Image 1 (cartoon, helix red, strand yellow):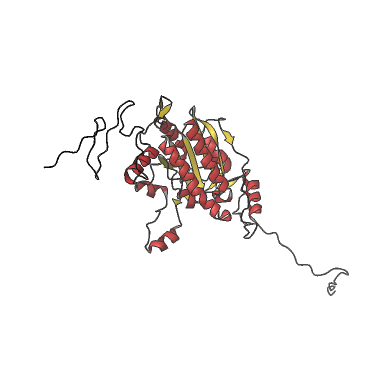
Image 2: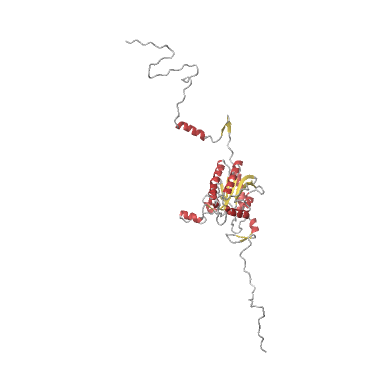
Length: 367
């Protein structure tokens, strides 16, 4: 019996057969659970990474910290009191690139929970009061605008008024280009405030983290009485290619890393993050504010150190150098003597002298 030919069923079409496929192993991990170390490439569990202060246990790479984590690392627990938390950046230039400057500010505030790239206030370090200002690189790269410069200046002025140590933790890519010249003016403002702090003998500890570059590096970040940096932190003014092109020379590898700067005397200490707090505590035991000069009041006139008085000095110098405007006035009685004293005759060049007390002499006979 011949085989029955197969017929295509009505309403059916040729459907390709799908074979089960096996998914390749995913290289992407949930960012809220795992973090890949940029130095050694090892995948690190975030909860374990937080327990070791976000330092890779394999290669020692120091991840960047938020401002809140920095405050918890340096200060005593629960001792921080924020000041001027409501300061926000404005848009004085109406700056627009791919998006408007106010939109960038709003996005950074939503991502970090901060009003701007820096936060300052007061706290305790091993029971000692300090003024502290911390920057967060997550807020627009920690760029320094008018608000950041104002907070650093206010922290400095508070430390000067209360004569307590100042601590500044820097993490920034430089001045904020969206504010133009206003951001560059913060360099002069912060440096002048720190100069008044230095002249008053109040200690300033600067902590440089990865990265500290641009206008922040060129202003207050490297003016500390003690400059501390974390290992392998990027510290410098301009990028490596810009620096090499400026001097037309090939620069050594790692010349902008904290270890290189420490070897060449630019930094005082390179401290592992786990030992940073203990190092700051030890420094504050030795760095004590200089006592204020004693002011003595004599007959209502204050005499303070130094004894040099610019106004008196310039007045005396002017009296010696400049010619007198007019001759001094004569005394009331004509000869400078006291009252009741007869005046002394003034010699005359046109005639003979006469005595004011004797009668006029007769003319001598001629012969």
